[in-house]
Image 1 (spheres, rainbow over the protein chains, first blue to last red):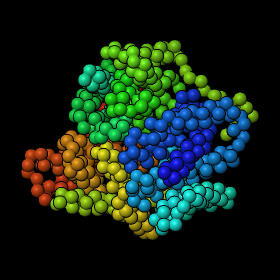
Image 2 (cartoon, rainbow over the protein chains, first blue to last red):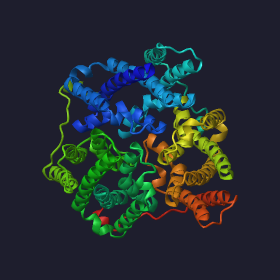
Image 3 (cartoon, rainbow over the protein chains, first blue to last red):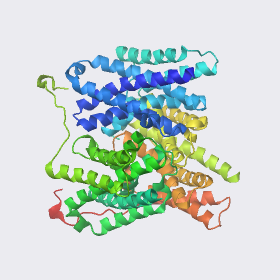
Image 4 (cartoon, rainbow over the protein chains, first blue to last red):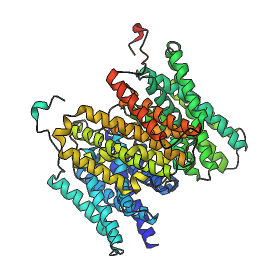
Length: 212
Length: 212
Length: 212
């Protein structure tokens, strides 16, 4: 019961902050009203829909529970209405996005565990919940998803989901576990942004072969 | 029984007209024979497959019922064989596409209701049935889906699905309901094409900041 | 039992060879460590995940069985570690990819039959298992999937799946059936590479209209 309630709160708050970051991205690309609403909804709910389909929780809650759609629409309208103000806030958008990342990774992992799945699946689907919407957004906008190329993003989500699942498996979890896991993910993401941390890229050591 | 039959007829007719419009698009991109068949099948059945996965109707009827594949192959072959004639018909292709849009939106919403889902889910999945195949086509061809940028397309599908679901919820539906809903969607789509109706785009009011 | 075991072996071996080919592609695009792991896993398991979702086998085995993730990670690390050596082997990568194609097409069709689906669905989902991961890779890297444009690739997968399903339906299958079907698919793919076989493309016969 407690886990269900914490899950539900985490998920709706994460939906709102992700929706704000999605609406800003859509607005910047000059999509029309319907395009902004669609991309906002997809960023906010796309990852969760993939998670629900994979664990057999159909229809996915993002589609069947009107609150997710409602939250997305409200976030879109706020962003459209207050755009000149929101636009100046590049940092707040990145912070919102990091908070959404942490909330979704943890809520997604928790839901997968509630449905009786293995630890590995819960960690993977926690990450998919968190980054899935952003990947769909980049695919729709015809660009290589940023998370594949640079920055610590999906790996922070992986960390948050792993802390939650690990604590439960180790029997040391309590009401505070989801918050610790979320804060770890958000913290790593924000620190990596501030300090420019990156994962290794394997550059070509044989320049004479660089033709291909 | 009556609803099932109407649903089945709507869905197969919509598959054929969508398949024709998909085959023309694939042929124009100079895909090979297999590429044309694949894109045609995806435009014709992709949206319905996503809908069926989301409502738990697996295996999706587009994959398990051979008539959908058969209709796609026939539409591909007709388009390949009669291409010079079809090519001159830009308007007929847009009309076919509008009819497919209306039929799929209504049939998709009806199927979601038959599976016992909520009104909101039925409207959303009616729209997804109608526009999903086209979005997949644009994603595969590496372009931003047209429906996100301009024109009244997905919103017309939303209208058709909403009329069907609204009439059923209000208790005023009858054998004519699907047809009225379909005609409303097709009509709005065709009128918007003829008169150049568009949804609002939010342009930048601060030209000095337009660098990013 | 026998069919299950053969299926399981085929599927894991196919995962490994596909993962190698996926890791090489990801490494060439200079993705970071996490990007290489993600694309490798997606090429290796993406098609199977779509197949499992479509036949209702959730959670998909690629996500729930740790061996698939493990095989992908090992293949990524081998490729990163031995890249200068792997890079010189363009032919071996194409051969690996052809073997993965055959194994996945046959294993995917077999799994669909085990779940009690129709012959048509088994053939289609065998092909989807085999080419789905590669299509996702191309979509993520923002390019038109190669299989839609040229070469005999998906059609070889279709052939392998059809031989397996056809033999079972005709009552002439035995322990050798999966191997014959796999070898037919791999053989057609490799022969088409060597001899430059292509499927027909329908070029414009009206050059004066080539403006659009």
